[in-house]
Length: 130
Image 1: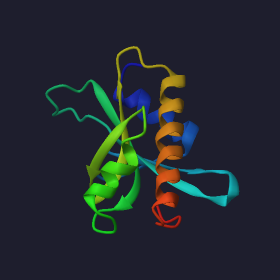
Image 2: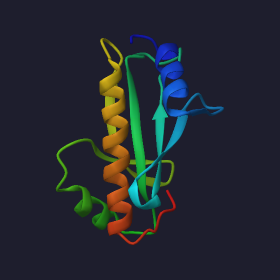
Image 3: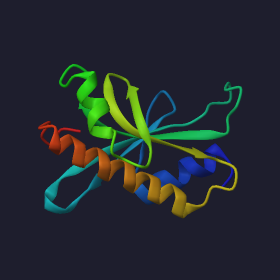
Image 4: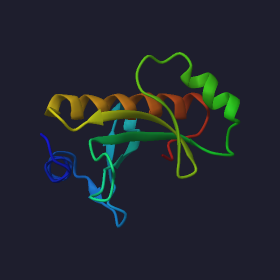
């Protein structure tokens, strides 16, 4: 998979992703125990100087609902992804490079960021809102 259009089509067809007005996408995943989690995708646009990657992010707390120190502390033990502050939320994020991207990399990234963010959301007492 090498183009943004191919990735967008894959996400819509395989994960039921919704395309937003800003060109980004989102999908919702359901986990055992009835919990759900949203994953957001920031895709490069034609105007980007380096349209070679996509950001996959799953929020776990709204900025202001926990301290920045708590957000850093909760993610300090993870070994994949990173902490991202995105649109007023603390997120677990992973970057995927479009060149030679295969379906398993996309699927695994989505599942990992969503699962980890959902665990943190629950641990931090944020309910199941994100």
